[in-house]
Image (cartoon, rainbow, N blue to C red; front, side, top):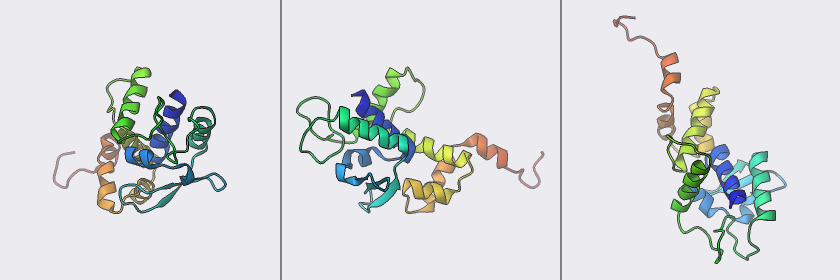
Length: 168
């Protein structure tokens, strides 16, 4: 279970995948030769994302050491028999909650979406523009990506200017 969960957490954290993306991933979505992952997402529009080395290594470790030898094409399956795909993205949220609990991490959002917000915030802090963040998160609209700019209040305070006429 820990090997599978590590691969899932790395995909959430490094690529900002949605829980639903994780549930839909198939073995054939991984292009090992070119280092890409095919993801359809909410729009059902296929996108190619670069597969980070650590996430790829974790997936390979899961496939070789932990994934049950079943004919199912879905990448991630339940760890107890019968080995079936996850029934919903809520199961991914449960994995995130379990991992945070095992790590004694408290006071943070427990949903899988928290990793998506964290990735966007890290990218913005590192100087990436909203367009780059939107590309990685696969947003169609810049307005959707702009929501993530509101997350980092300390960063916004650094660039905020006084309103003309206000006291400094």
